[in-house]
Image (cartoon, rainbow, N blue to C red; front, top):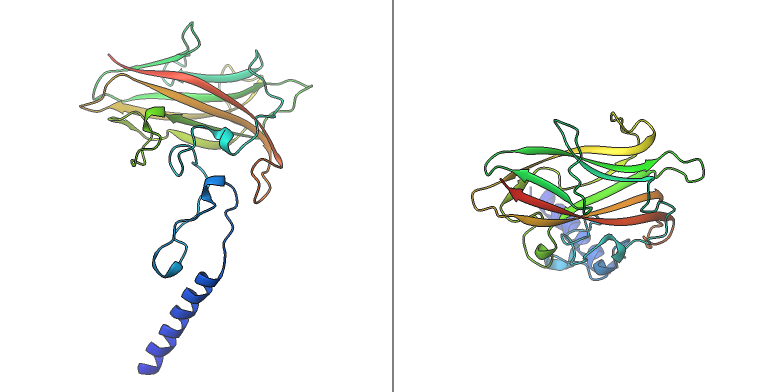
Length: 224
């Protein structure tokens, strides 16, 4: 029994020694150059997305990625939020989106991102998006959605190829998001941050190897 305990302690201390002596390079996000460590010098965690406001205090995707893609903010680019039940767009005349919900009730919307099929411009391969309340960046809470609003999917990174009626001539991603204003919820304004991308980032340099186009939209949450 004593021999087994000694062997186990030897293995544990060997792992600790290796972690202490080995330098680990942060692969993507520049703010991870100094990684958090637990006791005995063991690396406690490494992660990349979602870097904006949650794992770091970055305010947008452009802290890591280039805005160099061929997808431009024109008639061929699709960034829309639809009512899941009616499939009607929630876009307003000023270009913002308005989501109205009664307090305590749930509302599900569809986030639709992509581009119309255009032979001169290749379709994006992967689309990423994030709904974030800019006022929450720098605060300790992991939730960066509007305070006192419940949400099940405020962010995603999804391969293009979803099918949705009305977008047969487009390469899109589409996912539902359900929100609910809780007891102390108030009207709020979110930033919808979007990246259409193609290619893969090179390990150690997220600004190389992948092309992307970045967009922002304002989303207003209103309690009926």
